[in-house]
Image (cartoon, rainbow over all chains, first blue to last red; front, side):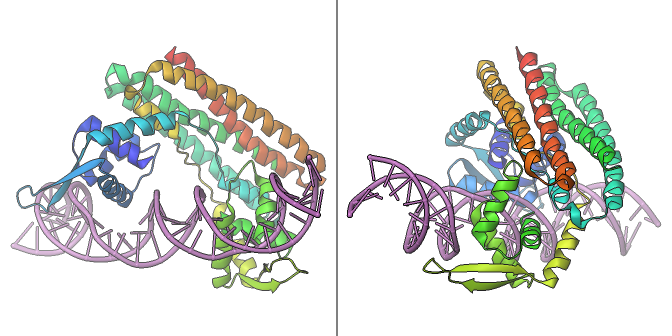
Length: 175
Length: 175
DNA sequence: AACAAAATAGTCAGTACTGACTATGATTAT
DNA sequence: ATAATCATAGTCAGTACTGACTATTTTGTT
């Protein structure tokens, strides 16, 4: 995923350095990925070694030196292949909470119930935040991106609602 | 997750070697985790180094030598702590397909539509399989485990249904 | 009896990720 | 004026995961 994001962002926004790429991801995709800065640098160097990016150095004023990365023609080709590969996406979730229940003979039911209650409240808040972000995002993106914004946000809404419904059912089944 | 599974299985089923642990996970949890054999061996050695497991060697007949791992008192304590930590579970999914849509300006709508159609059929099949496995599992587990089986399976059912609903909505919105 | 396939029991090297750390310039608060 | 905090721009070592590989035994198949 990370190389795809980097190559795509470099195409859409032009040459960038690591910190800026991280910022773009944090601003536009914070709800959907949690990519850390060292991960960005790791892949920038890797993509450079593969010839998909080239680096130039820049020293703006007396600021510390920056390494600016630009995508190459090779990089554009590789991006298209990655995207085509990803198109055959699959869905195979794993939930840490399944392990909790699998081994729940080692836990008190009361503890499970109280944690589930807290969890349900958290989920409700997250759902509210996502809905708010969706509206905010829709208010500033150009019209041609609105469909995509809706698709991505509603993907997460669906799954958070599923998680909430499961948590509520589970709470009731244990009471 | 893997250390928790290993320590839990060693408590529930007694001393085991790597391949058997893998088999237990594959039989009981195949729908929910995809832990590979080298991952098991990696953690067995790590847990041994931490003193949470002890290893004994066994040479049964003329079969190749086995390394059998048993949980220690330290290991039982660590397991309880892990489980208590996991109890504060969170939900933060990432979907590769979001990246596909985020960069969908580089794709043909027709390709998106045809892949979504295939994807929807796959999801329907997976849901049917999960429902079947749920019934099968319920038919042989002791009654006191039925609630847990239902909780874990229905967790996945909910999310697969969410994924299906999202995929169908998305397909319609792009038509 | 001979061969193939599956089960058993691992090793190892390469890939990916990230917490903790360093270091400097810019901005804000007091 | 100065201290604190934030933004910028990374490095590095440690952790985790797994594909590819090796090797033996058991079980079927012909």
